[in-house]
Length: 176
Image 1 (spheres, helix red, strand yellow):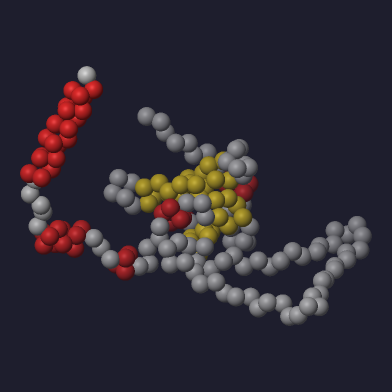
Image 2 (cartoon, rainbow, N blue to C red; image 1 turned 180 degrees about the vertical axis):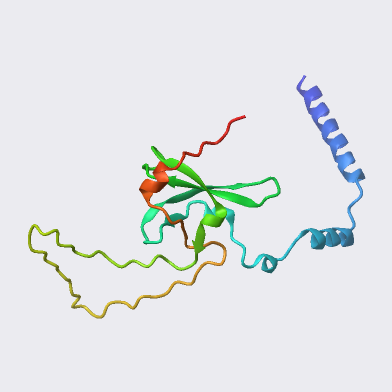
């Protein structure tokens, strides 16, 4: 019984190998010609952004206040992006309010958000004290300007507050 199984296995392998050897190899010149017509150099796409990197970008308003993040990009059947889905509020996606806004209303920025720093305010109920810390071990490191990434922007800007975005109609994905 075992001998029959081994013989059948060898015969099947021989048949499969003969079929593989019977195929004619492709012409190497034809293969090179096909690869040059189907591949495009990366320099031809210089200045374009990767959609996978745009999803997840932080969205700020004109006052540099964080209002949410980009959850999705919606495109038409020809591939043109028509809307940006912004997620507002929530924690780790739970309780998040999704809003779809037209792409032309969102501005993408390559430079990092300019922070003005925390400022102490006096509410009129008591004195305001401000403390400053000094470093005695040497000079503070100079701020280095980071080079913007050519494949995606730093953040997006949409002029609305979190409350205004939460008041907008919620975007829901249609299930057909």
